[in-house]
Image (cartoon, rainbow, N blue to C red; front, side, top):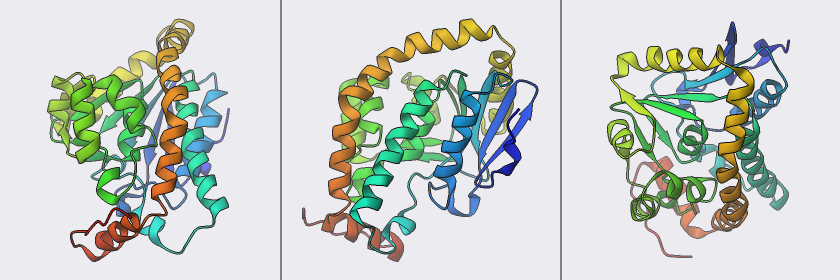
Length: 265
């Protein structure tokens, strides 16, 4: 059995056949940075080969599920072309890994799931959210293309016009509205979230393993087809906007807590 205790930025705790993974950067609202991405990649690789795990519950420590990419970290210094490409390929590999992992993944979303955080949540097989949680793909608000999964997934989960509106504006969708629109499985009061999500995860963890993993594999062929169609061009365009003046301005404005002024350059 793998040693899941070695990770710090994503905590792992196994109880019977249920493995709970918790993003553990609460001081940064669980933003993807500071080693969180690397820990999540490594954990998914371990879980894929671990027959003792029947299902995974994914959640965040503190008040948020995941704030997406760490803007402060991304704006510090000037990454080389090799580093930028490595980061983009890392996002690609993470999404394909989440698609290929055989065990069902249940997301428990509290607070908010933004940008890449929303993508990670929505790539899970079942999503339960607090009624007052919210989802948003906020890439455009920081001058970036919604390329790391938003353009792939949102049009599958929402009516096409709704998906385009939210991807082009970055506007939020509450947990209650996400459930009403069919974007997620259900929304519950915040104080019931963990209990409800854990009950579903436990049921699947103790369920018929072969039937569950192969049903997931069959259904996910639709998502794989969409990933193959959209993800590479989305990531390429997102990578291009990382070098734009608009992204640099948005990053500075975020740090300085002011409204950005975009120039389209």
